[in-house]
Image (cartoon, rainbow, N blue to C red; front, top):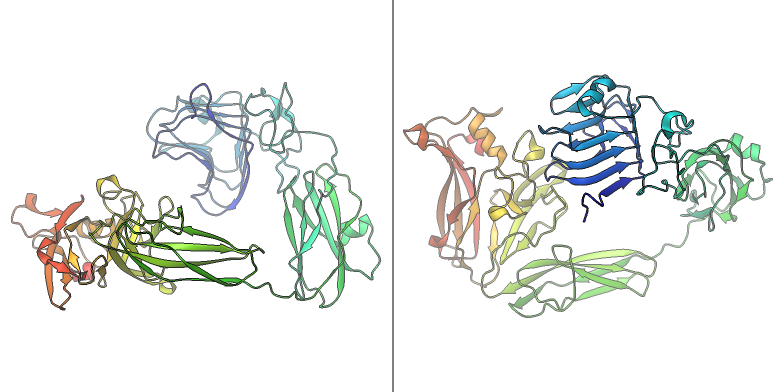
Length: 564
């Protein structure tokens, strides 16, 4: 755990971003939770492109004991070096001994304030012993400084004694940025096991290379019957690519002749000049290989009584034995085949065969017995994301219930039941339609459902003839809230007499139905103070429906263009 004595470190990162996206960041510290005790040191961040509001380093003002030191921060896209978000003073963030540069007209932002130049920024931030010069690098992909200059006006940091290549930094004056400067001419050579030709087809192949130093590789492919080339031949006629130390690079060889045998020749060039000898791969023949069979796995849906093991089963055909078989629950947590489920869930089996080929299948496990509340917390989501059915099977399971979903990804059309964990509460466009006005689930839960009913059917699974449903919590989406309160392109804001209500339809085993209504917005009251839009989680009691096999929804309102 980081503390003032032993801060967390973000060091030795080399970041290149060619971007036109104004929301691009080199390094960003999340402002939603206060952060403290972090050192950002010896990073090299370079932006190219046209994003004039992209930021190399974004930090929140609520951060404490944060140090930004001995970095090279260069924005050639015309964007900002720093963006500091928040209204607090930035005294707890210390900037010193950096080289910070932008080609743009604004050097940094702090809240809504823009600092046009480096000197204005230094006055506001108290950044000390830093420079505002453009650094020239040895090539476009490996950000080693070409000249050292003032980049060594530094001190050795105990937590960054080696550089990005694990090279010892100068004990007295280490180089700013990720790479330690050296005027020594180092000529790369391939590491053991490289170069290697892979992925051979009847007209193409890939060559994998990995070098022991940074530099450039020249790659030339020739028929085996042709004379081996010289260094000059490879450099003159080959394809040049940048290589980073101990990093595998794959280069595609195309337009090869079927059944012909080739050799790939490679010459390395150091970042400060100098050429290697010609290296050569083993000869390879261009012919379509025998396809490696893919594994196929199938499962069967399972129904169990509460408290009983599921005994998950998978059948694997094709592929190459031996197989590694792993099961996961809906939260993507590993489980054993004899897992005892506490609620209905979907389990995924993953099979990996001898050749590394994979296959997956999903089975439903239905749990009978006493009804279990659907919290949706058994469903996996990445942070700040949602599931809209675009990559689903038409439904999901939680508690004792099956939630039906519809999606037409071709037309970006999603409806019925979905789920989300997004915390933003604003609506700007349709990309924001999977949010709620509270910013979290009921009782501060992470996941919550989002329903655009058509009709949004939910099946009861724990009993064959249905069961009673106590109810559920509900609130508005920012989409609906904004349309009701402010109007939109289809209709104006709500006025006296308007309303927006949800109708819950319970269907019994005998086919009969009963309804419950709930107003999500009600402007029918005479007094303005009594008119409302729901903006908190509210309980909808469904006990009057009795035992039902399913519930579905429809919406009604006075503003049909908004609600339908």
